[in-house]
Image 1 (tube, rainbow, N blue to C red):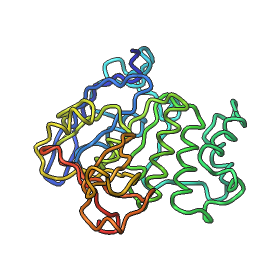
Image 2: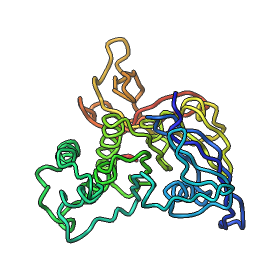
Image 3: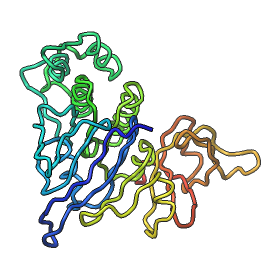
Length: 299
């Protein structure tokens, strides 16, 4: 498959524990959603900023779509952020306060190549059509972040970069935004890099995950490959929906939809507190491979 992003960069950074070097070499396949996972302060955000042209690496190269060079230290090439076809969404979304929802989305497009039909399609897809004429100060956090996502996609980017874009939202808004990210990624065949600390989010959205630690790329593969071999004892929390309470063969079990699969699970609380369609946590331990469901309100 065609590589949409091919890079090898180095940059000296200063972290809490002292100086370290960020060195990342990777290829991202066209249409892939790659999660960048790791603890705070290991260079995840810096990597996205380098790709976007907001920071310059000390050495290396960045190529897109097999031939277009965005950065090459040896070749003395460094395209400005404005010339790189990147859609970027940060955790602290920034909308223009004087522009409406529709105006903010349209702002993401090249002024010489306006696509009103695409703006309309994004308003519809993001569930923002009824809010098209509303100003940002009258939006909820989840609504504003959907506007920021739509604006990033409106310019038809070669690469979509999401830097902890969902982490500041409450659980319900975050689930809605995860669905929105999946929808636009699929609909527009985007190549997407997602920085996230949330393992459930990684499992839900990512085709592959790259694990950064102290500036180095330690592991890379599908979420199942990487975290199925995890040595951590921390449980991975996923979101599920109850389909059936009490199985005929085993009355103490429930049936739930998790990651697109129907699973039979033990429930940690009283079954009479559950009902069909209820959202629950499903905890997965990568070492024991055990799954157990629990109520959201207990977490």
